[in-house]
Image 1 (cartoon, rainbow, N blue to C red):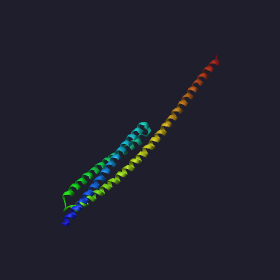
Image 2: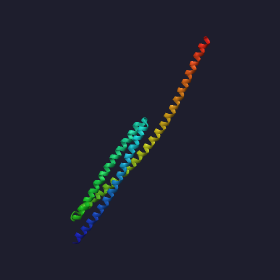
Image 3: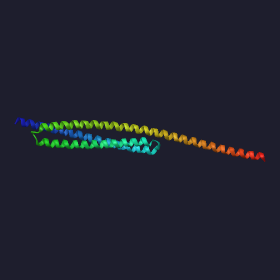
Image 4: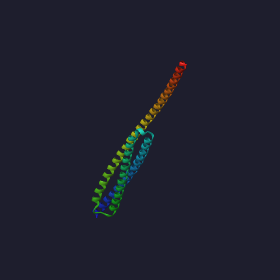
Length: 184
């Protein structure tokens, strides 16, 4: 009788622990969704840089591929977090009906907790990687602006050379007419 009550208490404890894991998995799911949105934004920003400066097309393509990779990783984390949530719910329901298998469920819940911690660390890594891509995109944006300014300078320089050539052409024409006039 006492042993049965103890097992029920332990099953209730496992039930509460599974609920905690479920909440933690939901938090990981939300964080993964945020990372997914952040990665999508980085992809669009990289595409804009590609259109603005054709000369950095290859670097922008690299950023785009990195952003797509993070998007896929974030989606994978989201799916795994959902799987953990469903598994935790299954453990909660199973804990309500079993007494003899309580120790087995406790061990399985501990494994899920460790797996959720791993997912949390992986999500943090993805967040840091997204920040790195954000900084890299900013650098490319600045580099594109510099190239744009340099191109404008080259355009003005070419215009000056064009005007100087026109002046030299007119000067040569004048000298030609002047020499003809001298022979007359």
